[in-house]
Length: 362
Image (cartoon, rainbow, N blue to C red; front, side, top):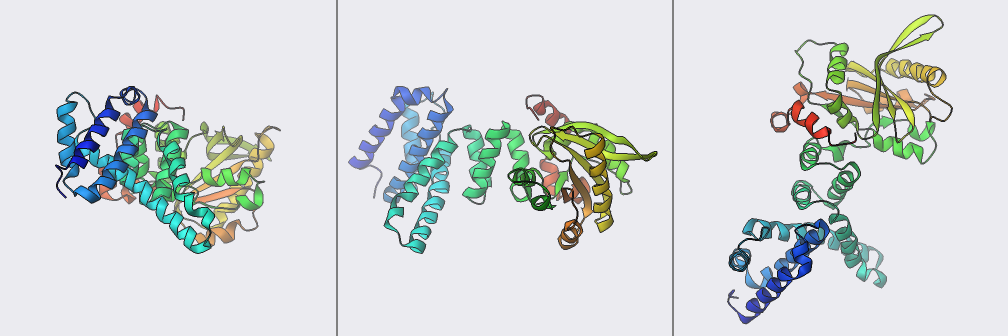
């Protein structure tokens, strides 16, 4: 069908009327109204494109530009983004609802897709448009997209920080550490602690020669503490490096000690520039007992240990933790030399990250 019909002209008049409305004008300053408008615009374009064909966006972008030459957001590129924005979430959620209806054959579920879309809209309007574009163009499905939206809201990420987290594949790493938290921590504290850890941890800001020691890694992590804290996640507060403990007149030194403000507990981080061996878990268990006895206060939760190794067998790690009575998580650490070239080149400089973190409450 040609895009010169009376129906198209009426539709264009309707679009222009919406854009002129005071609500849409206010959308320039109010993000929620802007995102809601882009959602409806994307929905309308998706529906009409099936009637008027793929040239619709180019045509309507030209017509709207003539009517609103000073208004941003009505370019061909952004109209395409609006369409993809709606289709990304709508198609996935509708498919989920249809599959659920087929599985349960329940008539009460016929409105579930609309309810899901409404809930999704309420979530989407809480992040800026630029963030939304980054999320729906980089995520594989709505589950991953919702994860990054929620993390953005919770951590107040800038678009650059969001981009960095997506490129480092945070969605696949979050909560994937091998732990014994279910057996050593009470619920819901154990679930929160599990989601706090990652596997692997990506320390791409560290530059080391081929031959390096664990202390070299440790020193660079402390040197670039802001980036280290960003990778650890929100809530970690740095307490000390080579934290000194005296036990039975013997000196012991913890690689890195943190306090987690949300978990309300100390976190011991031990670094091993080798493949995991079970003996590492025993030594870390010893340190956790020491911190619980010598450092922890009565109102603190049990101290948690994080063991970072260059490599590990998940099965060995699970066996090693099975009868350990202190909460320990085991993850791999990835340094610059272990990262793909395309990821290395896309990473911002340390200075850029540290400048950005001045605006964040890490």
